[in-house]
Each structure stands twice: as C-alpha cells, then as structure tokens.
Image (cartoon, rainbow, N blue to C red; front, side):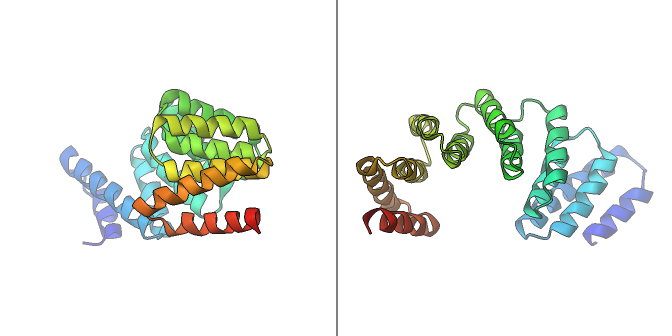
Length: 211
C-alpha cells in the first residue's frame, strides 16, 4: 500500500484507535524518509495530514518548518517553528532552528535571543553555540563570537569545526597568529576524522591569510 493510499484508508477507517496510532507512526517515519530524500512535496502532504489529525503535536510543526526552511519559504518556516515552541517551550533544537530562520530574514536580535534560549535549555547544544558564534562574527561582534567558540570547545565535540570558525574570527579581526594556530589545530583533527567540506573551507581561508 502506498503512503497516500494509507492516508485515504485512514480517513475512512475509524474502526479503532490502535489502527490510527499505527498509521500515524508509519506516516511519521515516512516524513523522515521524505525529508532525507529531499522529497519536500510529499513531506508537506504527509505533515499537513498529520497536523490536521493531531494539531497539538509540536514535532509535526517543527518538521514542516524544516521543509519550509529547505524550500526557502522563510515566513512559513518561522510560523511553524513558533507554533512548535508554543506547544513545546522546552525544545532547544526548535529554538536553534528558529534562530537560523530569523538570521536569514535579518532579525538579528531575535536570532541571538533564540540561540540564547536554546543554550540555556541545553548547555551542550554545541550546534547552537557554533551557529551563534558564526552569526556574531558576521555582525562583526568578534569578541562575543570568540566567547561562543571558547564555550563550545569547553563543552566538547565538534572541535575541528569550532577551531576552524574561531580561527576565521581571529583572522577577520586581525589576530593572524591566533588564526593560524586554530587553522592548524583544526587540520590536525581532520586527519583523525576527515571532513572534505571543512578541509576545503580551511584551504581557502589559509590561502587568504598566507597568500
């Protein structure tokens, strides 16, 4: 049975709650598959149906916000993330997602505030710390960005990424020796856990610095 056939069957089959719960679980799994495959149209259809069935589920709004984000429909994404947070105000990852959307829309203060909320809820949300640091750097608030990266390093993983981004911040702020040191630390970590995209970024930044 296809996914859409499952939806139609569930719409007309109300014989018991167990079938409905099983169907929702299956459809939720297929949402993840659709997002991973970048089949955003199918993902939206599934989520619209799930939200109609269970409008108090924060995860559905968060997932739909992610699809809108990938489709560059920023206002819709922002609305869904906000609704998800109304339903689940302790969702640190939802705050991080809304922060990225606010940043893209130019709502800098709202983005920084959302990252702060994410970090306050979960101090180990390293992606929130990393992304907030990058945002502050883009706003040329270099000292604040360095503080974000320092705290991210203190809390643990993603060190290669954090060293690279902190190095870039030192680089743009004119502290070239510190920048070189962080770039080299990041490259050393990449020998243990390769990441071609980060390595390519570092190569460009080091070329800019060293000429």
